[in-house]
Length: 170
Image 1 (cartoon, rainbow, N blue to C red):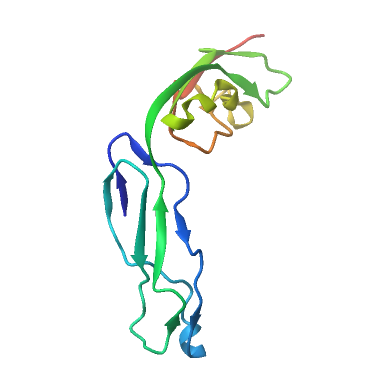
Image 2 (spheres, helix red, strand yellow):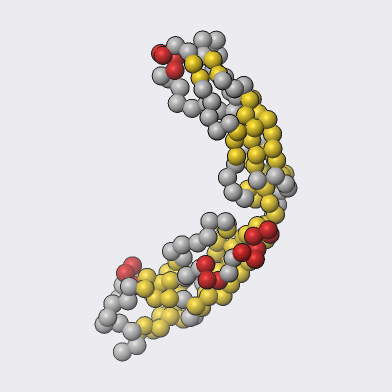
């Protein structure tokens, strides 16, 4: 269990070394083993990357042999901060018989990002859209705003407003 301190998050993947171990023993016993785990440990109030040697959780069978007794685990922890952009909305999959205008024409995209990566993200990485394919002007009062793709290194994405009004221009 990993619980970073407030404003801190796991940034990236946990690293385990070695990434695999060899087990040997009776075929009947080995056929029942799909994976090997480390002993459980709780990491709380983390505010920096932690590296720790951890024991392998072994079965209570003395006929199973493990190539390693321990693994080395690294959990990357970084301080995160909020970043916000105001970005124009795009309308996709608009049917030819329609001409619409959305209000507001821009939305605010907010997210959490590691301080060390703050300058690596700009608004060109985001493309907020309203998709006419999922919309029925006879039944829907507002259009839902979505982000078809987002950078991997951000968390807690929010779009404001999440729905926009529209005007059909004839």
